[in-house]
Length: 270
Length: 213
Figure 1 (cartoon, rainbow over the protein chains, first blue to last red):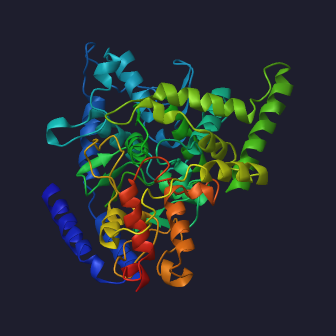
Figure 2: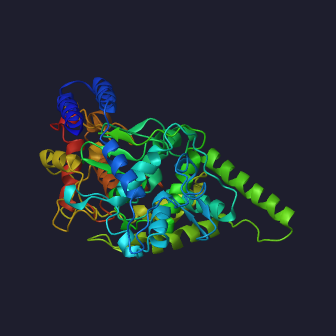
Figure 3: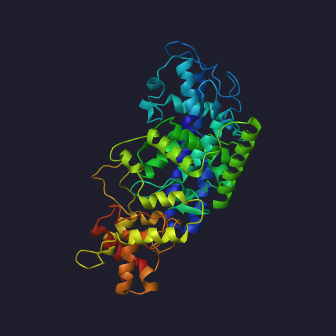
């Protein structure tokens, strides 16, 4: 199955490479066609299957599975959990996104150290696969079709949202960039890449519900933590730390703005 | 954008006040400045230096701080004037008085997107990445739209010394003319060298440049 999928993706990619010969408007249409072609057979399924195995397999010093991990809807409830994250967890007295909660469960249930649970936050080829990527693929797929419903009742959830919004507009670094530089206007693009306006509900919904995604150009499933990490690299900022409160606050702001939309990921992108 | 997010924030604050009223205690909702301070505190704790990108990149200069403060509201006229004045003072004219370099090299600078990321090194060639946001020539159809089209820049405005000087200033420090513009301050921030800026100005202002064809 994997080979067939990748073959189709490669053919679509070859088609896309012919794109620069036509005019700009046609190019945009061609890219849309290419994206549609990709939807049929998403290698993200490979990550989802591996994530399910990791979820069910006893591991860590305590040799237990993650099946009792509470993602917010009670121990072991995976279905629909991602659509309500980030949220406040009383047992940790902290707002957590999915990645942070998974790290928490691997530490508390399986007995791993923080370093062990975060040693490969993002995949880097077959030799350096990321358990985090796989677990995220599995859990998020279980929210496919569920409406985003990120809570903002607890004071710490409110604070995370407000702080995340301020981070979104924070201009810094040698290039003066903020998230808003690219993501606060309608109908703009970088080169030919369309940019969602994340300050408006429709834009935030479209963008947030499309992550995680299998990236054809990278051959990896990319999580939302990865998306933020790589945005800040391009912003010329230092590196956003995996599962930092800053990363969770920004995620809370964007996820909450997507409320009401049907969750669609894992998707496939160029 | 501004209204929505401001309204959201106000609504949030109103809810917080109402809840505080019910509970009969708790602190008032934090002010805008307090929330910004909290964001900066979390960012300083939540980023780590990597390669060439050190933590001092989170230290804002006055322009960045003001543009952050007014990002979701209207930029007051006096603040805009203050920003423009300070940035105008930073513009350094070319040392030999010549604004125009080689448009062909300028085209390379306009195409190149690397430089200053932690995935780059000090040796990585630095570009202006103009095409990421601007249309420049008819030949390059892969251009962004965050900034205005610069096609026929010199042809429309005239190939005058005044316009050369203006183009130089816009590339060196765009905020001298437009406070809180999204465009990087390429000369002021030391992103591009004087020679590279001359080449980019030539791309915009040389009558032989494809920008003006």
